[in-house]
Image (cartoon, rainbow, N blue to C red; front, side, top):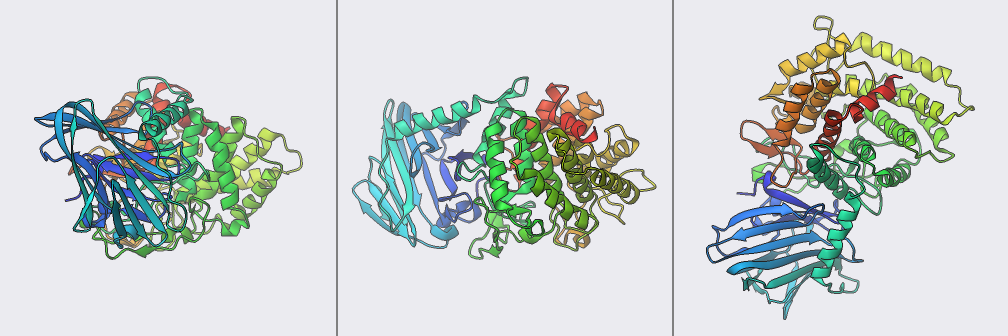
Length: 600
């Protein structure tokens, strides 16, 4: 059986991420980038697909763990009858090469420890050529080379490398795993202790910039560190999650690759970072966006690769059995070719919000915006696949239309904010009014008085909770009050919000999934705006209770089994933690501010 999704902690270095579980196994690591091929892939298969475990030989050891305060350095403690050890794990961030460092520290008595090392390249498909020279293990295959260094020798057996050693109180055993290209020089060894010290200082210096306080400060800081780990320090791109194909339904087929930069997810992440004082990230992402989307607005995609790559073909790794049997395992994402109108609104909104806090666009920015708005004016009446990326037929989704309205609204406000005199705003204000009237005419259920998922339907959708958050209508508007009530009545499962009632006729997929965590945070924000603060706080604290022992959340949650579902950790979920906390602890929270800026 695989480790539960919630049993994992996240490591990150600004270019890639790794997951380490409570048994001391690193079962997911893609090198050199988060969207590169995995070198440890047992998360989506078996141990034969690659992992590296350092743990006591005593399988009954008691396990506790924590992040080193203010960092992405994980400390896992194992207590046995004979003694206790701590394994400290980190992806080093201050070195020129790529290093995964692991330090075993003796805390009490003596403990027999095993390092079990199995590299598998190409998502577990390929066993590399492995050599053992003294205390160094070298694994080579194709363009990849991994070098494991430490003070104890590993021996090969059954296509794995093993090292058994004893650690006594006060002793330390340090391991350094380095990645490099097989046709270049072998990366130099590093001082593991110094790397841990430098990595700790790096993360603490970054998080010290956060403007966060209040009763939820600790969990917000952990979420900000998680969001930063999903950001690429070289390109400025922000991925939606660290993994691919963790299922949205146990054993199901709703398994997608989230290791790419969705414009929607990235902009929501940026809004959370902007609200907490991280303006440099906004500048880096804006630069990434301008590079990724350069060209005609007609060719603008909903997602890109970390470096701005446009071709993200979707294929299936049919040799992998999937997480707990959930197949297929998908690499790439076919939705990259979909039309989703909401991305124009998300991008325009974050550009406007960045300008409000002092990030003025470059001289060509408004002209690019004008070209984009002309494109939105041409296409906003057309159907799309919606923010949930349905694999059925395109429809006129309400949320998509609203976000198209947001695009034009924020462009108008951006021009006003900058005082630009060479752009005639009258036609754009008129278009805003036309779009708003059309949505209110065609997207409201006449019997229930609430908004619906798409024109011509009567179903509900949690994305409708975004309408007051982006300023489309005041939160106390009768249509929004009715929408919130209807969602509470029909889309809540055991007190948590589902995205929508799954229907193959709408999304083209088999029915069934867990509760989408971010949607419940949107309900928290709506309750705050409607003055139902006690209910909002109760729901928020219930959502916090879903976090694992190190403060991480996945995409979805299954109330029936009490298990996390979907890719992990998920940016959307941690954005919700940040924004809803700010909304609860201060009157002028992100939801209220974003809504008011759009409703002025």
